[in-house]
Image (cartoon, rainbow, N blue to C red; front, side, top):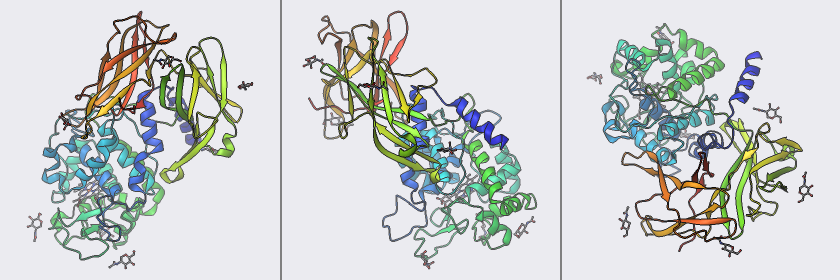
Length: 523
Ligand code: HEM
Ligand SMILES: *[C@@H]1O[C@H](CO)[C@@H](O)[C@H](O)[C@H]1NC(C)=O
Ligand SMILES: *[C@@H]1O[C@H](CO)[C@@H](O)[C@H](O)[C@H]1NC(C)=O
Ligand SMILES: *[C@@H]1O[C@H](CO)[C@@H](O)[C@H](O)[C@H]1NC(C)=O
Ligand SMILES: *[C@@H]1O[C@H](CO)[C@@H](O)[C@H](O)[C@H]1NC(C)=O
Ligand SMILES: *[C@@H]1O[C@H](CO)[C@@H](O)[C@H](O)[C@H]1NC(C)=O
Ligand SMILES: *[C@@H]1O[C@H](CO)[C@@H](O)[C@H](O)[C@H]1NC(C)=O
Ligand SMILES: *[C@@H]1O[C@H](CO)[C@@H](O)[C@H](O)[C@H]1NC(C)=O
């Protein structure tokens, strides 16, 4: 009880202050889990050709194995390797130690979810977390901030035909003791199995209509996290191909599981709770094994009341705010009436009552919450704010309880916003053919520069930050009384997914708008 209470206290203490683009993005991917649909149901394999023919494979298993193999190049002595997305390089992926197509499958799904706040390596780590949590496993502490490698790491993933001494040495090089090795292998191998195609000497053609890819599974519940990997091993009923394989040379799980006289495996077989809590720690250690010098964030905890800005722009004489607020661990009943209050530049406070906009649940019901849209009149989901009065900060009341981050408010800058006069045209291949982005700069601010921050996927596939300078207009203020327009032409070298507008101010200070989706009228 004491540890639980302490954990709750720590969790509250480390929640971030909004706005924080990196934490907002990590919080969304971690807790709202757009990736969860790939492991729902847990036997889903998106590369299956035909739903009625079971391949015997699952996305969840591929994702967990990928996170381990990406990490397993780590060398605790020199600090090289670790979970850094280097598995995406064909040179690394094609090594015999990385046999099988599970890595390419995983990268194909996960790499595109990365952005400038959540690296490919972060998404790989999250893939493992989400697979485990959504398929019966324990909650795993997740930190962000991994840095994507720009080249392959040195080899070093253990293979089945190696000796026990070699495996102990390999895990020690990765930073894991012998006991941790037994645990981590058991935690991983509660999912998936060995396929015939990459390992024909371990698994024959099975001719099993439920496993068209001839996968010999590690335990009888290969799409769920549970301690069957241990109970079946200890009871002598296991079909694990790395324990009961005909060629003892490749029975690595047998050597590893038995290496302490079965003490660890017996403890897992006797206690599903111990297995789950041990795996939660070992998986967290695995995903936090990163190259030396990489600074991970605090454990990501959900913001209890989280504004999610979808768009914030100037439309004529109106500032238009599209967004919603996420209320963590609440239902429509507990939320009651939800109000948004906003302060303006002229001393006024305004409010509207927000409309229920759906709920979410994932990770076995651990993560639940509701959304309320910034509108009293759906389906119009935008809040119109008089541009001259503007907006400085938001607060909410949820069932009459004030939610303002302990008095800080939810600050929203309106010094520089995108204007709806922006437009863009695309070639049929999706690249930009032309157009311009117009930024409305509030006449009360004196910027030294105005820019658009976006991301570009570099030659190695990494999301990198790109700033596009927006030139100061040659003519004096052209727009409305409140804002003037700075404009930049678009060109075919640019890529946009999400973007943020910003300004650096005379006398110091920087304004950054919310992260918004790139979506404009054609010219
Ligand atoms: C000595 C250490 C290890 C060896 C020799 C080993 C070996 C293997 C082999 C040969 C496969 C079959 C791959 C395929 O057919 O695609 C496999 C699958 C798998 N391994 Fe390991 N493994 C080890 C440790 C780990 C660890 C530490 C984890 C995770 C924590 C892990 C997670 C997985 C998963 C989830 C699969 C199933 C993949 C799928 O079904 O798509 N393994 N392992
Ligand atoms: C295939 O799976 C179905 C449903 O789980 C089961 O009824 C059937 O016996 C399985 N077939 C074989 C050959 O294992
Ligand atoms: C057993 O596996 C090892 C390693 O793959 C191989 O070198 C050896 O030839 C195999 N033995 C038999 C009898 O197939
Ligand atoms: C571990 O347990 C298995 C299954 O009961 C047994 O076959 C094996 O001999 C045991 N190994 C050791 C080292 O006790
Ligand atoms: C300025 O206001 C006028 C009239 O309200 C409107 O038509 C025009 O689009 C606005 N200009 C900009 C740049 O928003
Ligand atoms: C969720 O809210 C309920 C009350 O509505 C509370 O009892 C429970 O402890 C909360 N759970 C978490 C994980 O905060
Ligand atoms: C909310 O705004 C309305 C006017 O739109 C005002 O009458 C009301 O007092 C405000 N509510 C609160 C709690 O300030
Ligand atoms: C897309 O098409 C345009 C016009 O045909 C061409 O100039 C451009 O190079 C193409 N871009 C890519 C990435 O293929």
